[in-house]
Amino acid sequence: MKFDFFSRTQLKALSWWSDASPYRDMDAVICDGAVRSGKTLCLGISFVCWAMRRYDSERFGICGKAKTSIRRNLIEPLLPVLRDIGFEVNDLVSKGLIEIAYMGRRNSFYLFGGKDESSQSLIQGVTLAGVLMDEVVLMPRSFVEQACARCSVTGSKLWFNCNPESPNHWFYLEWIKKAEERRALYIHFSLEDNPSLSKSIIDRYKRMYSGDFYRRFILGEWVLPSGRVYDFFNESMLSPVPESCCEYIVSCDYGTKNPSSFGLWGRSGDIWYRLREYYYDARREGAQKTDGEYVADLISLCAGVTPSRVIVDPSAASFIEALTRAGFRPEKADNDVLRGIRLTAELLKSGRIRICRGCEDSLREFYEYRWDDRADRDVPLKQFDHAMDDIRYFAVGISKSAQPIGAVWVER
Image 1 (cartoon, helix red, strand yellow):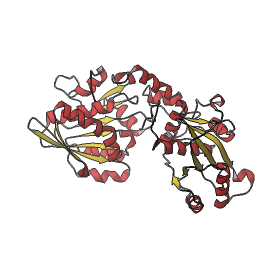
Image 2: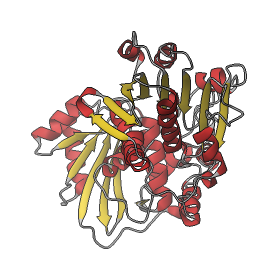
Image 3: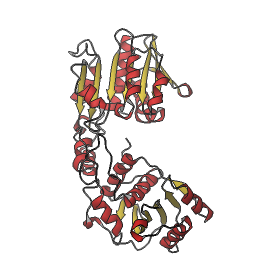
Image 4: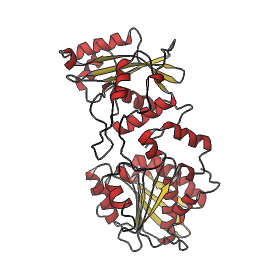
């Protein structure tokens, strides 16, 4: 990656610990704000430069929700930059360890994943001179606090990076709101703080979000979503059925007492269309269906076309087995709800997936699907969500294999 210059905000994050900085005596730094604002890479460079300037033969921690996400989001873009600067880097992938040397000094940087409450045991007992926590809001509090407690070397500092979440999130309440009390420097990033983004790319990101998600991901505000989940979607966005498609996929949300929703999708060019759908509400109809009957309904929905994939509610074990016996090759959907909602919204707004006229149950649920404004985190109400779930399964499913053209897909 080539840097022509840094923004003022990035320079603050890069140099806050230096001898000439008025913030050099702070114990921690917290960087939050808009997506793609350059905070992750800048904090990574700053962390390593600080460690190599202040210490020799010490151990440091780099933490994320999982080691794979740390490597993807931070380590892979960071290491080439460090080598360009002049650091000698030895990446011992199998050991979760990166050894870095510069001008006679050598330090060890260990990678830790904090996916759940049990993860604190992975870092317990180690002594660190500093820790960088990437996407700290995605890690459990017990892990974060254990990582902080490991930093007992004289002069050690804490480094936090995150995108905003709920204003009731413990990290916002305990660290950002109490930054001065905790002797932490708080730095807020905007899209314009990343000079590597062109104006056209910044404008594209701004078009991708609306409502509370615009406030969170573009303005970098800690807000709790309220109202409709897909507040931008309306009947005017419905499309006619394309004349022909070159590939077909079925997505399924399965229910016994709850409704079942299937969608038949067809690809025309680079766009996926929800051509038609099946929706059965056992409570409304007064009769439940068997797995075999649902398989027959799915075959009828396909009406002579052969889907290349059938993406199914991962909890529907018996239905998956019935589909397998019928000759289909079902795959379990990714059921990360919030990530799926974000991705679905991005694909709908960019026009990469479109809903065809006649999909009345989808249209109805787009208007009825709402956030739970009583929750202390981002969660939709478990109502009017069956077509919404099968559409979400589809959006995440195609994102794992498709090559984005003319749109930006953001993984968080």
